[in-house]
Length: 357
Image 1: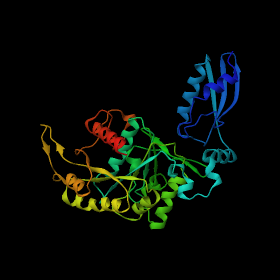
Image 2: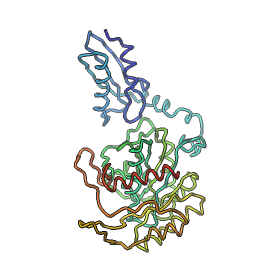
Image 3: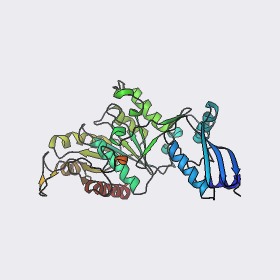
Image 4: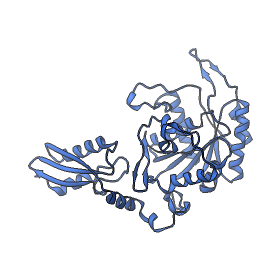
């Protein structure tokens, strides 16, 4: 006969898909009753209406049936405010005992953190900076890395839409759980702004939001954090440079001479603040015609000249085109499928980042 102890041991392998901790460790498993080969139990969710409830239900059922149970009856409840507060304190750990300054508050920013920060920037908007950010993050995740992505483009946030994210982050007490998509943990101002409303903020508020994205978000122990910066050299770019002195940068441009000229400012700013520029990505480099010929719609060699000016490497040239998908469940407007021609280019970019960063 199956015992409660065996069930709890089996469920230690089932993780909450948002918090990435065992449901047993999070005290989500309650009221286990074993009646022969029938098992009933309650799973107490962190919040009512958890969007990933179905995933938890299937994983719990599979784990218990693997012990020999023929029938598994799962009921769901939700934690009380007091239980959520206690869980938030547990998840934050030592952070509760110190002042929440950026270097102390977020484990990612501490001197012993293994997380590598890659800021993606450009001189102007419309060159595909966010597309590069999203696809580099996904490519690193596909390469087996633990990846976070912060949409730091406060005014022009677009990452949730580009990745096809339709759910909001879970908030436990004052702790925010990032949304995971394609194996990437994502945080964006877009999650907190209703109906695509404009954000009308000045510099100090922008810095506060960046601090919130580190201090109040429960990130995993990440290998890479990708930051999609606003274009140009404004307040948010300065805040990133000041808050994350160890970050390295990738400059995105198009082949057009003007785009490359403006992008040089962003690269120069990085160098003047002692941030290493990993290289340049040239987006919309050409359009490949049906006969295989390349049409250079926006000019040629802008990325190459920019890389030379910044004394760095031209990492990648990405053709003009949109992702095509057959699998509607995995649809995301700007994520290139694994195995597609452009998807493979992004895997090459991810490998270069792994080698250089």
